[in-house]
Amino acid sequence: MPLRPAGRVPTAAPATVHTRTAPARRGVSRIAAVVVLVPLVVLVAAAIFLFQPFHGEGKGEIRVKIPPGSSVDDIGRLLKDKGVVSNSLAFAIRARLSGDGANLKAGTLRLKKGMSYGSALTALQQDPLPPSVVRVSIPEGLSRSEVASSIRKGGVSGSYLTASAKSPGFDPKDFGQPKKRKGLEGFLFPATYELQRGGATSAALVAEQLKTFRVNFDKVSMTRAKRAQLTPYDVLIVASMIEREVRVPSERKLVAAVIWNRLKDDMPLGIDATTRYAVKNWTRPLKQSEIDSKTPYDTRYRKGLPPTPIGSPGLASIRAAANPSRAKYLYYVVKPCGDGRHNFATDNAQFQRDSAAYTAAQKRAGGDPSPKNAKGCKS
Image 1 (cartoon, rainbow, N blue to C red):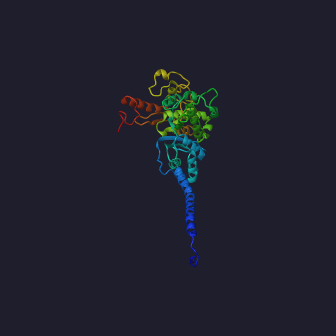
Image 2 (image 1 turned 30 degrees about the horizontal axis):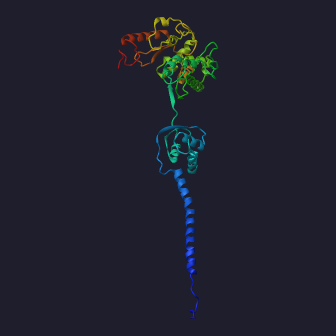
Image 3 (image 1 turned 30 degrees about the vertical axis):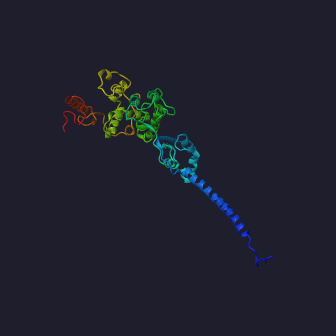
């Protein structure tokens, strides 16, 4: 037999071992890659889902009212229902992750359909739109019937005359209105009011006027009026006449002085505005039949104050009525070419001269001689 070579005979084992272990290592690598890749894919998907990098800013316009006290979840559901965002839960998560959830504002906001969560959150942190309101401006001196006419087309619903006949929680008797008198004439403070659309009713307007009246009337000292034995209601009546008689603010206290002095001397006030109130004629020249109508508001013949205010005065006239000038005037008449001013007199002789001058100027002007550019006025 031939001899075998000396030494270890090589086997195929190493090759066999090598060829078996290589596929196992590749399998482990694939598993590790999957383990790393899956969370990464989930994170990327979540980021795209929450941050919507390819989402538009939305389109169209929609107004959404966010109620006060709404939570982030409440807002998310509301936006989803309105079509502003696609997913309410995702919106809430996005708001909490970004820290914007604590900065969202209540109120009516202008948003868009199909907004990204980020765009919606940015919009919800802006100042809300001003509420839709009905603005009502009521000038000083108007009576209830005049206000009713002026607001009829202004978007205020309901009867103003009915609403201003009485109002819950406000009693004119607290201000000295006699028991036999009814209504809120004089208490309906003139100002500009804003009422939310949908709640712009005459009753709501009256409630706001009475609230504003209380605030303003409390600013006026009644010390002198009390000493003159005038009630707050009397002051209100005087103020309503001042509001109708005066065009130049500096004359308020002078006209108030004339009224106080005439009351003290037991003289008729002789104010035609009270008759105008009774006959509802504020613009046309008074007819003799209207002057002779002898209503309770006829201050040419009746002494003392008229039964009620003839309109709602502003704060300046109320202050003048409660604290008039200490002048001794008893008369006044429109000053020709005076642009609304009056000539004041302490005696009847001077008043007659002033009245004659007014009548002459009236004839020259062919009408109202008070404007400074009236016919016959010197430039």
